[in-house]
Length: 174
Image (cartoon, rainbow, N blue to C red):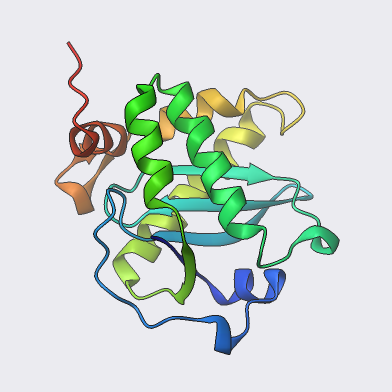
């Protein structure tokens, strides 16, 4: 099951009401729950998605308030995750496994201050890298996402999010 732990900003933006929220539960999917937050890079509204278990992250930009509906948020997450896994040359069998784990979906509040801390740090890195490369119009967003998933993270034993992800998916690189 795909659990999206949304910040209050995301809940408001996508119209997720209190009645839509599930109680936090232990996740048995590869990635655990996904934390979702909204932030601005320049004048573009961006969404960051980050795995609670692996700290793997990606961003989507250009979210328009008029098109943000709670029904679309799980699909945005799954599509972004598939794109990232393809970018990282993940075998089809593992991608199918991840997709199967994403059905059905539910919403919950964020529950971990340390995970939120990691996400806030990554948001700063994303914003800095994008602006340094000339904004969304000029930057190579795929390259930035790949680079940031290769930063050592304290909350996962100074490992890299992509390496933890590959280990959990059973992908062994040479």
